[in-house]
Image 1 (tube, each protein chain N blue to C red):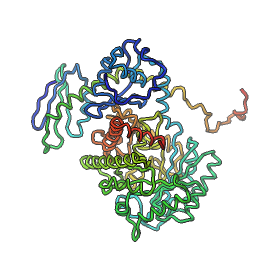
Image 2 (cartoon, rainbow over the protein chains, first blue to last red):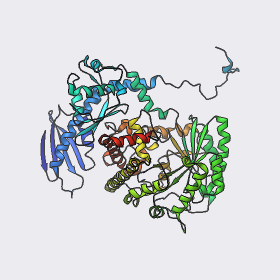
Image 3 (spheres, each protein chain N blue to C red):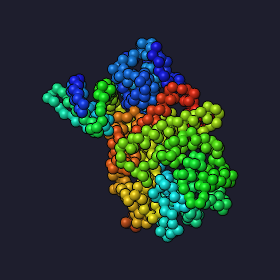
Image 4 (tube, helix red, strand yellow):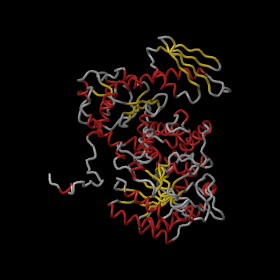
Length: 124
Length: 501
């Protein structure tokens, strides 16, 4: 990971084979309260992320933010790993949770009687 | 040996020995999420809301398959992870049916559909509370009281709810200004409930200033619960709730005593409305509730309705102030419990029940899918139907986004299964909302599109600037961290969700 910083801008370059665009979007979403976030593919190898403070008057101490970004990137990569690896079992749990519990009550609406007999009176 | 700071109870794995876990090399991951709760600790939460507090880095070790049951220092962790459905020795867990049933139980609040039916019986009020932009000080009953036609239509719609147990809640303005309407509605509902086989719980929300002996006797005869507002000691309550030429605080206290005497202590509850003034007096507010013999207090966050703001910085500041207030008040409540006086904080109790039990909680603001429509519906004084109480307050600010229809004009099906309800349902599930989908506290929290719309002008909402998210994330984190840090407090918290220890 490469980092370039100035008073008003932080540029980070990360390996696109390590961090996908989904991971980056989920991670930097949480920085969008204080920063204008932009990320784009730089060649085939890297993503380039730019953070610009929303409040231009604010002096940013990037030295405290950079370690947090590094930690967050690792955390969101982990989260994505868990999400991807458990996708099938998660779907199975949810499907099993509800599949056997269909409401089998008789419909409450009235049944029409187009041919002149009461459907409920027929013995089956 | 690795320290696992919060262990699950031993009975959760009593059928297997450690040796059973040793026999299978490797493991499969089950769905779980994690969140750092302090420098040293992180909390793991699985798909059904079970949690473990572990040293930081444990999630990474689990994913990297570094938790080795053959390593004595990992044995306890490995057993906890297996027993609590974080990992499985086999790709398809033997107990997947149990997991599925637990998941269904967590969502069982949906089983019976709408229970709470709020009737805004009158918009008139004799108080002029500075934060309320809803009520009207007027004698114009025709314009601001619910008509008998709309009451009848509301009752008919309530009777169509699939839920066999419904709650009919009378709100205002000041509901007791239209006491004759309450009597009419209750008598009519009693007859209809018999016909439809419904069990109805009645609640009157009132400031108690107009309470008479006749009213209390009627409440007693019809098992009607009373919910009132008490904002703290007189200097706070009277400032918040101005009533011309009267002491609102004294009136509510007299009313509480009168109701308790006739209805019983358990049938009278009070709520705190937190205002900017309240934030400076957390301990004093708790002390007042204890002085009056209450055993619960509901520290509700400041509502954005009435003085809605879309100013991100102001919201953030207000949220930080509320959290500071909340923690100080919670500390005072815990101290009372330690000293032997049982008093429960209701917002924490709702969250703790979600954290510590397999059961859901019927609290509209912390549900996924959200509680609007599926759990609550509001019939306004003019016959308009809204998705929640907050939605009708929004309507008083000329925003009809959450108006679903009108009593007497729309059918049950059009209201509950119509296009608007369907459109809202897309933003009512936090499992699919940005920011929430990866959040470890997802199963303890909820979706609130009305709040998102009010504060951010967007039904989906932007979590990084959402005061709903900031507040709930911090309260949930704080509760877990506090339980992990102090076992005596954990015991107190557990007593709150089982009523008495």
